Length: 45
Image 1 (cartoon, rainbow, N blue to C red):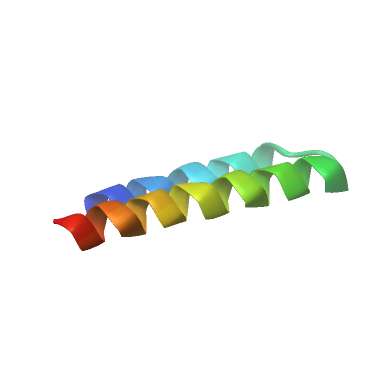
Image 2: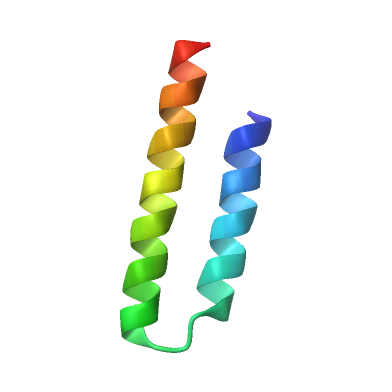
């Protein structure tokens, strides 16, 4: 669970830092990747 929380906090920081719609799209894509990796890691444990 800590990994997921850390990923969400990082995602919020990235979203807060983006200045354009293009940047927001890249941020959302990276957040999706991070969440998917965290979910896979939690599933394997």
